[in-house]
Length: 62
Image (cartoon, rainbow, N blue to C red; front, side, top):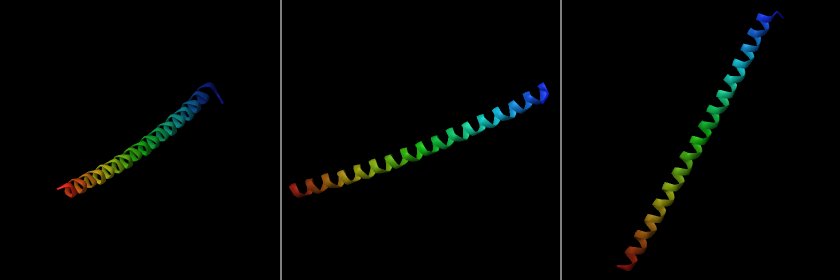
């Protein structure tokens, strides 16, 4: 390979590496967002459960 060909080849390889790194980062971000949504749903369910329990206990006291 000549100098210019080698430089172009290295540019292509580095572009591929940066592209795959970006894909990996986006995939990880998507996974993290999904985990956050699931945690929020669980927290909301727990709040609803506790609120219902409090209402039940208050109704018994009356």
